[in-house]
Amino acid sequence: MEGGGGEELAVGCVLSLRTTLGDEIEGQIVAYDRPSNILVIRCSQEGSSNAGARRNIRLLKANYIQDFTYLKKAEDPLDLNKCYIDLAGLQAREEASLRQAEIEAERIGVGVTSEAQSLFDALSKTLPVRWDKTVIVVMNEVRVSIPYLPENVTGGTPAANDRVKKVLEFERKRLQARGPGQF
Image: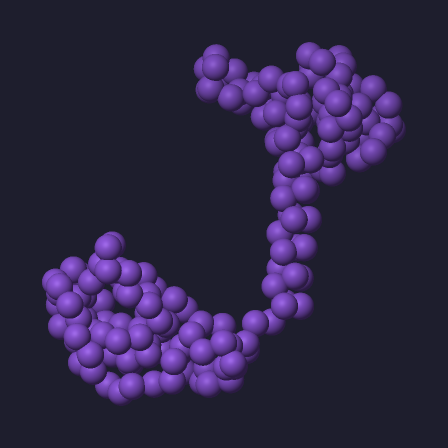
């Protein structure tokens, strides 16, 4: 599909098309970028007539269109008077993403070796852990200090200490079996 697309590929047209890869797509053209030869298509979905429904958007290199059928001319998809943006939903998704990013960032030790991070990750699979600078704090009571050996486990109940020591011993053996530098 080279050159000018003509009236058939105007923004707002609904097409049914088949790609050179065998995919069949039905949707409305939202935009066409001539320099990159890319179509932006809002794919049709069953029961998505309401304004707030989520929609799938596909970017398709026009070169990959094997053939298409013009179905109809629909309303302008970029008409600002008919666009619906759920700001509260977007803000909620943003806040959730930021909280998740903060949680993930807290799980990364600052100024620790990759071995220490591997030990932290192993402990976190079964126990609640957090970093206190370079010290691993398990269950808010057991502390594991550098060099993160079973002898460096302090605080907490004897049962909690034993559990942390066992996980440390097992994970150290597993890391040594992998070989040096492969944490």
